[in-house]
Amino acid sequence: MTVHIGAQPGDIAETILLPGDPYRAKWAADTFLSDVRLVNEVRGMLGFTGTWNGHRVTIQGSGMGMPSLSIYVNELIKDYGAKTLIRIGSCGGMQDNVAIRDVILAMTASTLSTPSSGIFRELNYAPCADWSLLRAAVQVAEAKGTTTHVGGIYSSDVFYDERPDLNEQMVRHNILGVEMEAAELYILAARHGCRALAVLTVSDHLITGDSLPSDQRETSFGDMVEIALNAAFT
Image (tube, rainbow, N blue to C red; front, top):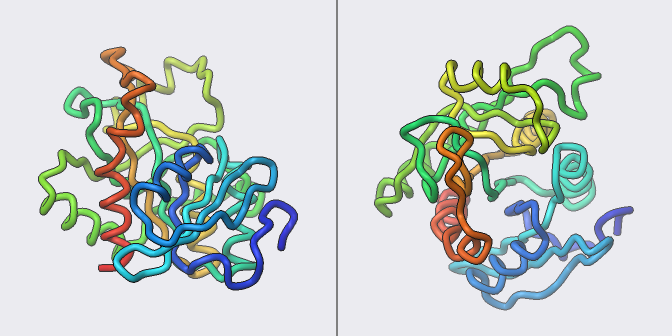
């Protein structure tokens, strides 16, 4: 057990999916895994372990923002031996050709700051996905016929953004979408020799103003979870 994860040794699989919302973790576990059991509920941040096509998988909520994700990923790697970590979450579209319900595979994650920024000091570190996971996810998405975009995203450290000038530059430089966790995930995975990827469903759009109704979000996220699971074990 750790400060934030109440799982016992052996409760956590080496392959972990990381939705921000703990109830999305429950939905994904109930929908896609077999022999599911609850392994963590500390602070209401639910985690479940089960099997998918014979492979052990843990789906653990990570909370909102990079500081929260950093806590869970550090403990999952250092204390429970996680090797493959895939963020599954929503994002805001930032390009005209990116539509609601499309899936974004984040090759890189730009950011203003992360919990790891103090380590790098003056260095502008470039967080990126694991190539083997990214390649596998692209192949799975193409086989499924899912409308998918591969490229850079922006990991913001605020939800209520008041920097329209910065958003304009993100759009100008072909950033596909904005979310709040992937950059720190990629940094931690690189630091500890693990594999990481962010598979994101576009739930709203910064340019068009379109958004996915809350009652349709979970049912629209199935492709994202299937891509993540298949990529992890390809």
